[in-house]
Image (cartoon, rainbow, N blue to C red; front, side):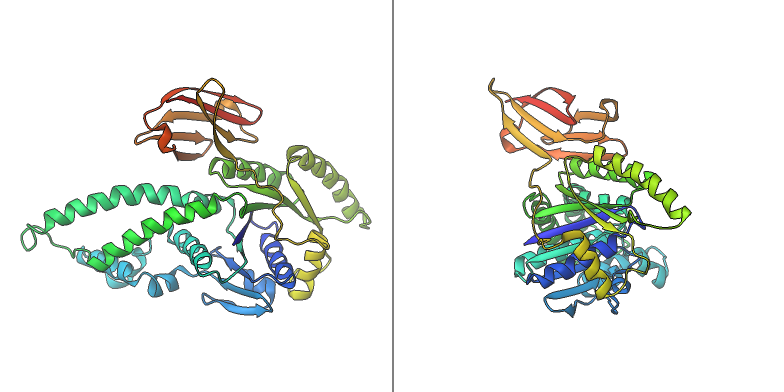
Length: 389
């Protein structure tokens, strides 16, 4: 199954590009679904149809839906929601507030990733197009399998120990409800599913990120950061989509001045992202809404080509054994300076990387368990970390 994730700064036209891609994929005969994981959904508006949390067919070969975490908690994780709500109520929180607090931050991320896993297992679709929230939230989505596994490992072991102790103290010290076997089973399943999701997201051949931007300085700077952080989380950025490009024949003094400004930014984009495939779409005079306009956008972006194509399958992170017998971890880090990187050995065969505002714990292969960390070097927009077994 192919997974195409569109990301970019808010307002750059990410939803329109995602919808145009999904329509073109469906026209090419691919079983396609497009899902919006942005809490401020606009996918239905873009397609010109009413969308909600249930999957609906919007065109031949094309299904769509907008993720709603309240709906997901009611239909998929009712046991966890009911337990958390009961726990909050036992601590004096009223019913409505308890229901609200039972939805933890990040549950939208879990729901979105589990949909991807379900689609792959059921072989329902050839392609999943994900229209994401703006950059910051999407980075949390990309990091969630790593983070959730760590927290679930720690929290689940603590909860198990507590449950063992609670059996001897029920009625004496415990003044709140204990999780049922169903709750514990659901948490275990979630942990296992997140490991499977991690494998899907780091499959650089089938899962790729396409960054959308406009030829403007703020969008360019944010796209640089997004590209760097996606590499940190080992996600394959294969393509750059430049949207809302002013046509070269634009008339009027204002538009001509904007065109001159834009040409400078286009040159900046070409120099910054020269290693990526670039797709461009011109700005239209009318609103980009409905199948007809989205089809026109798809024509501008893809021409006669098939959007399912993977433009680059290089993984940003790789291990290799060097000629001197040592092992090396290589991590691609575009637009990062050496003084922005902090690296140290973590616990349980891990490395901890801090790059700018993002931190990632990298699990090392079992072959490097107990290996000596020899040091690290930075050069050619890559971090090289060496080990001796």
